[in-house]
Length: 125
Image (cartoon, rainbow, N blue to C red; front, side, top):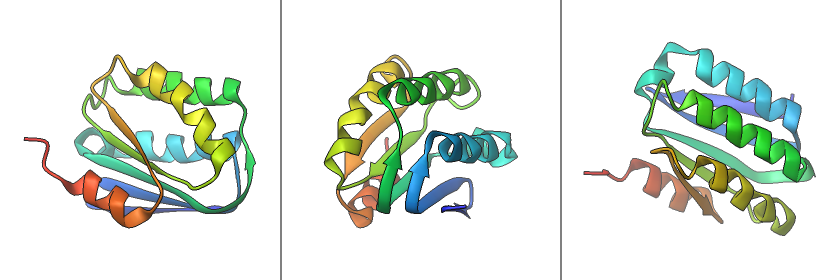
């Protein structure tokens, strides 16, 4: 397992290390969406800065977007912060954002965790 899930009240920080794959993202999503805290979640912060190997295709990115979109029915306002400096990974993110675009979820890409955390915890009022 190359990830760690840390809950902070109803919000979640996911840290990936070494390698990341579609299967692991799906497992994390399953844990998050099955948890009762998800319905009150304000944000998800996904930290990929310690990933050396990305095993994710554009088609898999699309599937993740479609699954998250269908899950937005249970919590329609979640901030999703994606943190990565990897150019190839960052090229996949617009596909995810395109699918999520017609939900109330906000998705933003960051180069570092402190900036992502600041955005996640800012009030949306």
